[in-house]
Length: 242
Image (cartoon, rainbow, N blue to C red):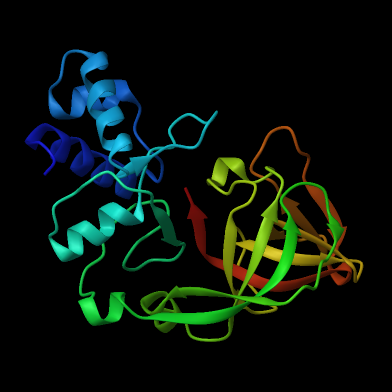
């Protein structure tokens, strides 16, 4: 079982992200739960990471997030032990919000223990556009993630790190809802000029152009004519294996 102090740290991370949309710093955790030493917070976080309950993205600040192991333990009320984990993030409002890290509710054990197969079409570049790879496989996702999103879901493997500040890393598998229209600010898989695929935030501009925005300052936005960009799908989830 986790300690009361560790539970307070997790609760603070959840509450902070639900309000701010990003993870707290160690200093803010100290202030939030009344710990005077940052090294004490660091020790507790290391313990939680060692047990597979929280994790961070290497090289990125403010990247604390809860793993699927913690979510499962919260739902099932099980004793928490160290083990390998696989995280599944729901990018929309709902049971497990990707950025706000809200703990799932109303998830039955029967529902959590079932899965659903969706097509895995190959790779998409989170970096500079690349020729789309159309190799079809399948991947299993939790049934609650499939049932939550109306419409056809599919998956792509991520190559590159242009979306790292949105916590999307190289080798992640992204889950998308098939659509050709999205509102501004959504993360999309898009085809450029009919053959190059990329993963970016989508903005339709007033001058008739489209901006595809990376989440990494090392990459520049792509400004393109609207008719040269075809949206394949909107990002609704992410699978990361450890």
